[in-house]
Amino acid sequence: MAPTAQLTQAQRPAVRRRERWWRIAAPYVFISPFYILFLAFGLLPIVFSLVVSLYDWRGTTPGGFVGMQNYQVLLRDPTFYKSLLNTTYVWIGSVPPMILLALVFAAILNSRFVRFRNLFRTVYFLPVVTSLVITGLVFGQLFSMSFGLVNSALEALGLPAFNWLNDPTWMKIILVLALLWRWTGNDMVIMLAGLQSIPNDLYEAARVDGATDVQSFWHITIPLMRPVILFDAIISTIGTFNLFAEPYVLFGQGGAMNQAAVVTGTFLYQNSFRYFKFGYASAIAWVLAAIILALSMLQLKLGSREAA
Amino acid sequence: MATTSMTPSSMRSGLSQAARLRARVTRLVLYIVLILAAIAFLLPFYWMVLSSVRPKAEYYALPMPLFPRTLSLENYQQLFARSLFGRGLLNSAFLAIVSVILQVAFCSLAGYTFAKLRFRGREALFVGILTTMMIPSGVGLIPNFIIMARIHWIDTYWPLIVPGIANAFGIFWMRQYCLSLSDDLLDAARIDGAGEFGIYWQVVLPIITPALASLAIFVFLSTWNDFLAPLVFLRSQELFTVQLWLSVVAQQGEVKTPAVVMAGSVLASIPIVILFATLQRYFIAGLTAGSVK
Image (tube, rainbow over all chains, first blue to last red; front, side, top):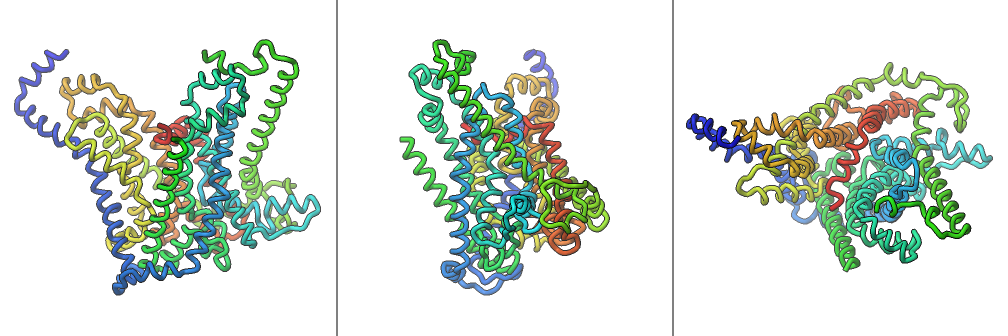
């Protein structure tokens, strides 16, 4: 095949020259859209954002230069601390339990003597394809004062109804429940892929040595799954600090009365697109990015130290 | 090996009856846990559908009964009669389909290039793309809004379509899949005189359809479910996506009945659930890409 092809190319020198040029240029042309778009809508905005955070920028028109003032104001803003605290509560309530649940369900669904594994996996994964807006709306509906499933159940048991969505503690619990419902299946599928890469021989050897299934889970599954768990923990932490659609739908853009359920994502949105304090909001965005980066590094460090 | 390793523990030889009983109890407990979890995951869907088919009259008997006495489609009729909900569904479908076509085309071309073409600076350029994935998305939103305002793209679909056309995740995903393509096949096409774009278009694209399908589903899902970008960039209700309609319009008086909002949620979920049910394996493949190994 090769000799005939060489012959054909030799017959067409002009075409060949043009082709050779194109063969060098083509790869750059094929990958160029990414770089053009990234420059315009990725890199430029990031640099621009740093500049904006140093100005008293309101709406789309620049105000005066204020230096670090936006950052100083942020560090004294009680709502900022409230949002950090609420986000921390939500993180504690959702991320560790979700990882544990996802791992346990993945382990159960990975064992071959459980039947209907695909059916269970599909059911657990179904919330993951549901939109965040609908997740918020449905959980609002479940806990609604008059139309909610929870109050209907209480009524059926002869108990009084409760206004769940008006209670600062319950608001956070409902948000946590919504997150667990929406994301556990997602983590579970990632864990399942990780479990499938653990060789069966290990479990078989442990069984021969008399280990129980629970012992195998703690001493084989967990250590070998550490990288996947770490990946999941970091992604979920970033997700918690960017949380926005669910609280927006559940509690409104004000984070409910007195900002009772304000989280960092809501706080950033309020200052950007409700008050249009673009300078201040850019400072918030940078501080949040720094916090997320620090937490990710911390998790990476803890995760690798435990492994060693 | 595979057959022995996963044999039910109760089948192992030399087990006492007590051990066999214990294995059976363990399995029963596992199934109970699995079924309870399944109920917990399905309950919100049950309540969503149920709330959407309740006749208005039942709303006066508060709190709502756990099981409906009669079913009605009046909430669905109201949804289309009194608002731009139908328009929202069409808008979302339009945006999702356009995004799918553009992203799949541009990301597969770039992904294939990084996997199979040899050129100077390839590794550095690819690492550069991966690095951009670590940039926190929240930081870019405000400056992007200012830029979009300057080029008069606010209240158009451009900000929702253009920035994502060639994105890092899509390129990474397509590259990983294209790495497994045979070089001999591509060289054969090259020797036969096919141009670089021709090879991508006629040889590569037909082979990588599973990866294209995964990416297409992923893009469709994220565009259909997107909320923040439409919320920030769209103003006119005629342009609203279905998620925006559900979260904004539905909260503003016109159709404030929760039952109507639930009917809208059911309709907005149906395309996604159908897509998921029919193409589940592509979903899962896209999700686990890059997370393991």
